Amino acid sequence: MKVGIIGAGAAGLCAIKHALSFDCEVIAFEQSDRIGGTWVYTDDTGSDKHGNAIHSSMYKNLRTNLPKELMAFPDFPFPPQEKSFLPASEVNEYLNLYADNFNLRQFVKFEHHVVRVRPTQNESKWEVIVKKLLDQKYETFIFDAMLVCNGHFTTPNIPQFKGSKVFQGRQIHSHDYKIPDVFVHRKVLVIGAGPSGVDISQEVAKSAERVLWSNHLKTPKEVHCNNLIQKPDIKELTVNGAEFVDGSYESFNDIIYCTGYKYTFPFMSVDCGLATDDNYVRPLFKHCLNINHTSMGIIGLPVYIAPFQAFDLQIRFCLTFITGRKMLPSKEEMCANTEKDMNERWSRGLPKKKAHAFGSMYQDKYFDDLASFARITPVKPVILKIYDQNKFNQQNDLVHYRQYKYTVIDDEQFEAILPRN
Image (cartoon, rainbow, N blue to C red; front, side):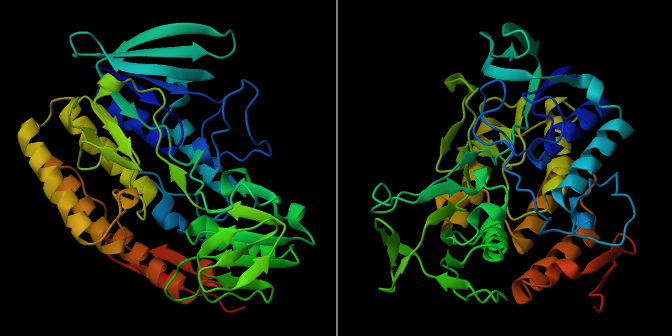
């Protein structure tokens, strides 16, 4: 079986490795000239040397908000070291070690931009048209199956507030944020309380004169920056500031939108049978297998989850059915199963944009469901326990949670130590 893979970041590399272990022929297409995906840092913003959008949203000083014990693939731990929370450069080094250890680079066509993916006329295979960026020529490939690992931190989601076009200061998305130095002596509004909003607001506060952090957290985060002021949601932007929903007003020079990303698949033709509505990608069986064309897997949509573990499990799940090692239920049964899952999510009040959001308790159930349904090796319980402990630490000690050092004792037990300064 010939399997095409889009992307050579963490998910793409994992897909190559497992597709080979399922005795498939593999070709992966990577738009850039190196592996690593979003973990590759560049000072550049906007477009790359070929005119394509910069893929990575990495900023220079990023440290993981998950310990490396959660970031590692199940069969390839990080090299031993004293710390658990790593800079992005060390995660990228790990991915290069992973690629070299399993001899994966030879299966990647670098600087190949995927232009279009569509089912062949009889819908039994996939036609993939790619543009070879070095010579600007096009080439067509035919595959039996596709694993889409294009990443989902590239296309900024920027909300439109009343007055967005009136504000005269600088407005950027966290996708284009690199270093805090450019905000020295500035007053900055940071919008969003996700991982990037938490980190960037505190990092910019070390350089800026003042940082306003707009979020709708029910309980304000404890921060140790005297010049960082937490504010509620924005009611309206003005020429040089904003009115907030509590009636207060603040002026500032710059806005950084830490407001997430849009799930996009610009290369997919409409006959691929998938639709994306406010980051809800459907119809997908178990959040990863295209129900209308079950030889296509969409990897990495879940958020609030241990990402590399999720990639590994989703890929093994998809390949188990794509290669025929196990048979899928009927289309009607898959649709009914998916509808039941989504109705449960809607009943919890989740909006469409969080259709693929999990979190501690639901992550555990999802991982168990994938493993038991496909009868494949599950995620080790210790991984789920560390995830829960880290989430607790993060919620209760935002300033110090990255100082914890985790040690895996066995498949069930771990140790977490907060070193004394």
